[in-house]
Length: 306
Ligand SMILES: Nc1ncnc2c1ncn2[C@@H]1O[C@H](COP(=O)(O)OP(=O)(O)OP(=O)(O)O)[C@@H](O)[C@H]1O
View 1 (cartoon, protein in one colour):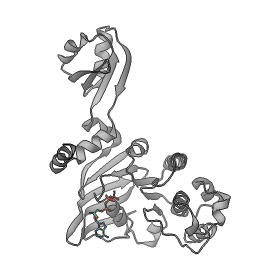
View 2 (tube, rainbow, N blue to C red):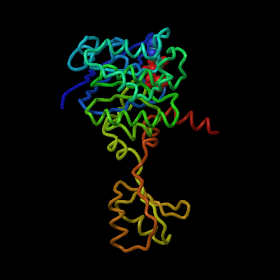
View 3 (cartoon, protein in one colour):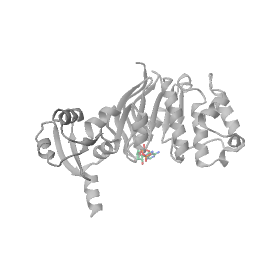
View 4 (cartoon, rainbow, N blue to C red):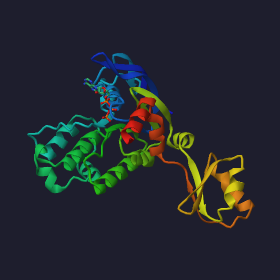
């Protein structure tokens, strides 16, 4: 695996306060990584440092084994950031052509338009006259202009309608299949669940979890098997060593476990008369909630609920 991003012991201090506190990680070629965390966790600051747009207070960032500001490195990366600052006086078509001219091997104009779903009418508009959603498309086109190997997306789908969001992720999926490395931040956990092979979870400037999406969900969240059946089965199920809890919800028997396969074997071996079996492997929302809720937050939540 080729190392594409290396973040080593990076800290960023703003006005005496640590926004990012001694974080380290490596991202390899072809990975698709979601950087998640609550507001103010340090995600955007980390992305800006990876891009070389912010300098770390201490620590070191390398892209393709070089400094992010190196021209050869910049030619291989594309970024779609939260702030869309586009050269307003130019028409959309002109901005795209200008950006293409910065790169040695740009994507064709037609390909960029088709990948990002910009319409003929949008191309003739001045960039500052675009709607929020159209601006995101243009920003996406500019990120892809140089046919990058490494793509940074900071909350890319904010302001997009459902249709645009789904076609945006289809394009990203296609880029991923071509072997591109994708790093993105999102507050839509479903997007991370659908698109990321790996999750890096930030909280208060620190990384509190880093692993494959599947592992993170498996480790932290509850897995259940639920089914319709005689409620007398509950007692026997509770006594099994691989069962951590059993309860009844909406007439269904819900078994919480570390190993859903064992529950299924048990049901079939014992030939229990059950129907409509559903297996839930845990949701990223639960993981996020469990990992990012600190003691202080818990107190606030309890107080807020009273
Ligand atoms: N330029 C800056 N000057 C001062 N403080 C900053 C600056 N940029 C970020 N911060 C602070 O650093 C912390 C981390 O901010 P950052 O934008 O990286 O968080 P985030 O995880 O991206 O949050 P969000 O999900 O809200 O975008 C916050 O406390 C923020 O107020």
